[in-house]
Image (cartoon, rainbow, N blue to C red):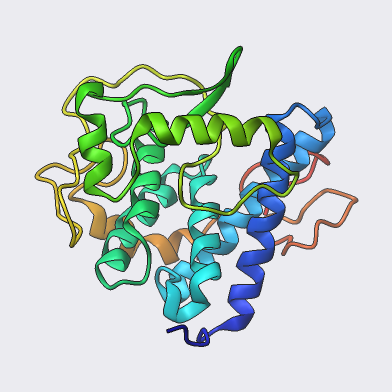
Amino acid sequence: MTTNPQRPDIARDLIDRAKRSRQYHSRLARGLLSRTEIDMGRHNEHVNAQVLRRIVSEHGWPGRSLVGEEGAKSAWQIALHADHLADFQRLALRLMATTVERGEATIQQWAHLHDRCSINAGAAQTYGTQYRSGPDGVEPLPVREPKHLNARRASVGLQSFATAHEALRRRHTREPESGPPDDTEHRAAALPVKTAARGPPPGALQRKPLPRSESPPVGCWSRAGPTLEASLSDKVENRPRDRCRSKQSCGVNPDRNSLRCPQGGLRC
């Protein structure tokens, strides 16, 4: 049974942003973008993450009740591509864990974001959901303890690695421009190959409800997490503010910025 989202306006915004992001990544993976288009795509990814960050600071993680099924999925997809905001991506992982326990998001989405955080931290992934484009097509990024991979995948409701890899490979060769917004496997991502970081690997998930590992996933969140969560609003509100020097309006509040945008101004 589906119910109307509490905030359809937020849902529409998230869905639209995620759709345009899928189109960008689909064309990027197939080498169809110019340098300028790639730069603008990265700028839009940054803006999307900042929008999601403000939504989280005001409402918590946008689950099904707030934004509906498609809106919740779109929020997850935006978080997956927030690689340039590692602190927010780690916070999103922690908030999603609670959201999954409430039935407001899927455990498969959590597993994908868990892997993404691990790879971005230089560690091997746990569930084998993250790929890169290689000379022979899509190939998985490093996985810890590969012989136990399928058991870990089964614990979070993912199909076997071989089946998922073949499905992704086929889809990648004939994928339409918009790309499918599904939870099966995350599409090949523009992530560098990183060697596993020294230290304990991310903890495995055993069964529903979402268990807590003895040690947090490497690079995802730490026991200092509440401090990170509490500081989210401060980070959003107290960042240095300068007017955007770009002569091309990007439609984003020019008083909020962090990195430089392709037009020479400051990203919002």
